[in-house]
Length: 457
Image (cartoon, rainbow, N blue to C red; front, top):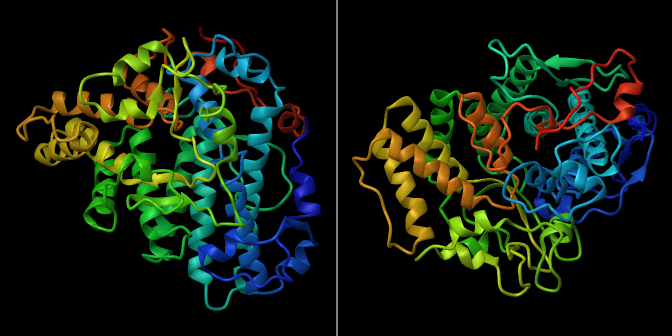
């Protein structure tokens, strides 16, 4: 499979500019199928520029990204999925021994860089903007940062793998020029992500009709710093989001609901008869009609199948004997949360514990999660120790986000701090926990340095 980055430049796929694109989420999600239009025609004015931005969002929410593949691949690499019967591409990913081939992950990689290309197209044509220049710049930099963050987490060893983070990361692409794939260092990639988000949080408004907001940029900064084990900054940004009081913890049923969750900071929105995200999530996890492809381990289910934990209702170990499935995605239509308050609460709690400050705040964050999870029957003292807050934050995270693509990031992040937590017995920096780059990326540069080959266990 050859990465078609050059073809993207020559014939850019965007939404037809014949259709007037508004600024509301309903508009960008109700746009018609994409068409191939010459780049110079498509971005003749602000309407065309918004069309390009909208098309970037559509890829972000599509099956190759947050519509399913990002979560599925992350789950298969981690330790909560029972992949003993997986084969083909899935067998390679679960076996932690991917190759340059494998259409499933390669399609994801291609679309992630296509998203970055479209964001760069917007940034290079901001002179076409009239009333929305700052807003479009903020959106483009948010999307570019979000996507680079996903790529570097999957295709490189984590932040902290080397003392100065000079180990190889992924290609940074900040323009639409045709270039050979060159791997920047992980530090350079994270520096670029942070720089983009720092601009986005200033340029974006509080509310943005379904598009990224300043709060989305702040929430993503909290996640990025948290992944870096930079707990001081992770606390600052998660606290800003929480303290805004714009988001409220919601029920588990609402997390993927098409009516919209009150705790959603940035989500991929469903519109009836228009844009429908999450198809790949349902393909791999839906379990109401047949046993899903991706199933959970007995060890994981035991962690949630405890007295008073209401979250066990999100899983089923009865309908298909010997098989444990999730019911999170058992809907005909869903919305896909990307950034939401539960994550911010757990980031702030663990960051408070790690820095040894604001422990009462951290304990209250844990209690907010516990109150919902255990229907008010469980809590920790507000005077809890840092170690108790941290252990609770990590445990609740492992259950809250099961099937949502978070666990492998924790294995790597905590591993970089010196603690192996992978329940499959692998060390956090084993070669197989990074995906192999597609052959097409390496074909553009014969000196492109691939990841170390080999698996884990």
